[in-house]
Image 1 (spheres, rainbow, N blue to C red):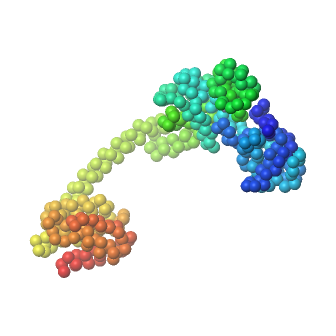
Image 2: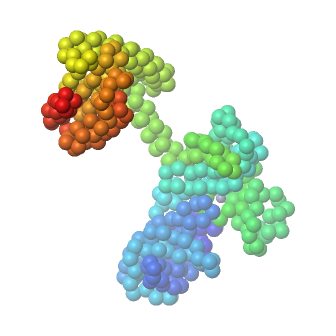
Image 3: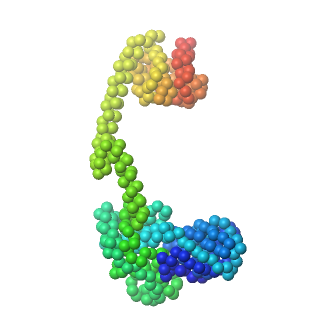
Length: 404
Ligand SMILES: [Zn+2]
């Protein structure tokens, strides 16, 4: 078993140890007789830092538990000239350790707050690089409950309560009533005691006073299989997250020339406007298509009792071409061969009901020449061309083929 120095002192960042064994494969690693490095476990992620031997200084990139209860330090490269018994110095990255202590202690405070206020037990804790989350065993969770728990948790932070590490036997632990009793067979249990607020079994690294947590900010909550997941950030993460939120809001507010607190109202107003404008546009397009169809029909030659309209537009949307084709073929017996060069080169072929041609087949033939794709029914077909080049010529050729 590795002697875990962090069990007794979470603020021990530098330590001396002796090499127990050296691992070469699959990754270079070293096991020490004692360590202050925390291995990934209990929801908390591992420390990083450096190991210094008489001849080398190497980064510790990952730390894990072994099945035998040892702590293995994975290294960026093999630690040369080291064998069992070599004296080693270990240095933990202090900013990362402090961040983990803030997040983990915040989790204990928050989990206890949800139990105190609403009898909602925490069933799991997850720590990621940017945020943490707890899963609460509850069928429902309101915005108000989240705010109350956040308020109480921050009260506990402000009161700067002591956080002590205690070791008790399993028998004692069962008597004192812990928030969470682990299912292990171990005789000795390590408890984290937040004075007069929370007592729970835990192997993690923690602050020594709740004030060191800084602040606890609750973020997203979502329904998960077993209850509700609540995301949170604490300490410096709370500050950097609030800073990022503010930057985002400020950037958005500048777009609206509004104050950040007026953004929801502004966004709603803009969305309403967009909806109204869309409706107006639809109506105008419809009117424009009807008028243009009448003009085109008047200008186009009649042949065999039907009008033939062939027209390439510079910039019309495909939806407008379809609308125009619909108007043309409904206002009179007609065939419409329409194209647009931009924003996307496209073609629409249509004929009035009862006309003898096959627009789908005609479009396919035309597309084969243009190198595009498309298709449709006997009366209406559409397709997209890779470029505007040759569109007019292709329409003329299609019209020509109809008179044959
Ligand atoms: Zn814990």
